[in-house]
Image (cartoon, rainbow, N blue to C red):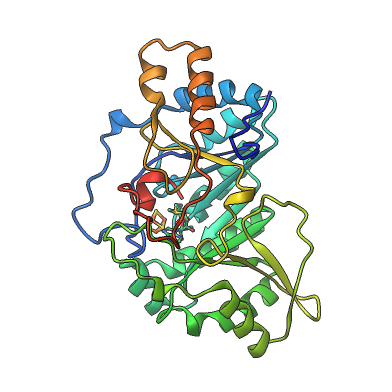
Length: 329
Ligand code: SAM
Ligand code: SF4
């Protein structure tokens, strides 16, 4: 059985947000102060999350990514990783983290079965890091990356949000970083999912500009034939074969047609798209005696209700009322 929507897209990939809390305040995601966090009792327990995954596997779920908020602020996350890794049918588990707590948790996460890591880092200098995240912590993230490499995580990728007026001077340093460390750096176009509603189209530094800047400043970037047609990033390698760069052109070249993802928020709401305005309350089913068949039906219905695309570039676009940290990026 598979989760096919009205446009023929097959959904195999679930993003699980484990918390909306975070230890920094990236301006493109969270408000700087007075964040209204979910009450702990609202969060799905690890048992509720794993039950949901077990129900979704027979429907075709194969890949999981844990995210948030900052997933590493959820206590004992390694236990959730181990529980999910033990579910037959799950082929792949990844984690997206800001890396601040990675040095202290890397060993436990690896032991629990996690291998794929995306570490978000938007700047390679401490001042710019602080300007974007409104907190200190650059050195901690670098340390986290170092420990993760030593522990053996593979692949490790950097996620870097590209913002006009802020990121231009980071592109070439990140290009050299990718060449020196062997870590793929993926630039993500700035999307309208910030808590302050301040996104403007002219702040989007486009994937095309990024590739051109790196090609001019270091060496030509050549496209890598994409093994996974569902991967949101278009991948490039420098002409001499050293260093891999990815660009995620969510705004200028949306990949909605290939989308294979669905999401569950930390408070148990099922979402069929980052930009969706509707969600399904799966927590109510999980907590109030819902049967597995009802949960499975809720997942199928949510996928069937998925729209064709996010329409950021259309006049009709309305930013969802949950910002990124509350949805789970
Ligand atoms: N806290 C973790 C982290 O930062 O990696 C996981 C959650 S975060 C919401 C997931 C990813 O979404 C990060 O790579 C972050 O940079 C990205 N992100 C957040 N807000 C964004 C926005 N408005 N546009 C594009 N990417 C965004
Ligand atoms: Fe926190 Fe990640 Fe949002 Fe930054 S992008 S504020 S690290 S949840």
